[in-house]
Amino acid sequence: MAKPVHSMIRVFDEAKSLDFYSRAFGLKIADRFVFPDFALVYLRHPSSPFEVELTVNFDRKETYALGDGYGHLAVVVDNLEDEHARFEQEKLSPGPMRDFKHDGVTLARFFFVADPDGYKIEVIEKGGRFQ
Image (cartoon, rainbow, N blue to C red; front, side, top):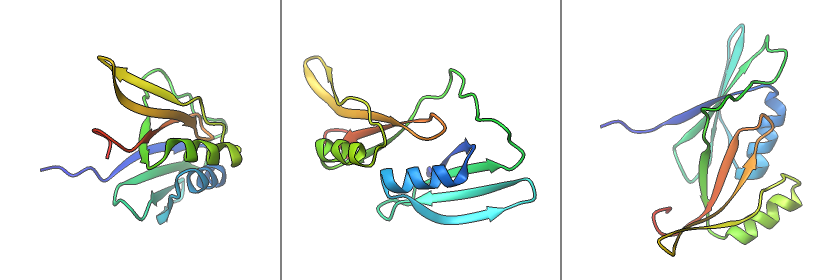
């Protein structure tokens, strides 16, 4: 059986990305490997073994075009209102909170935020299928 271990994204400015993921989600560096042309930075939260892998290409001169195929990462939080307020206080520019329904029943309460490279992250309130 396959076990998910990480999701990789390419980032332009390592310092900005590390600051964002630390302040927004409490992700800390688990490992960092530097090669001649690039670095791999693995970020992890203490509550989960799943990691976000940041790939930093040193010769990159401009930000990445995300294209139209990228969707988003998602995280769960205990209290959506508290997290949204914290994101606003941290000046992380969260989007509006949404109550997403299916057949009249709330499927998820969430908001989106974008990292420094424009990758969207969905912040979902814990409950239902999102534990």
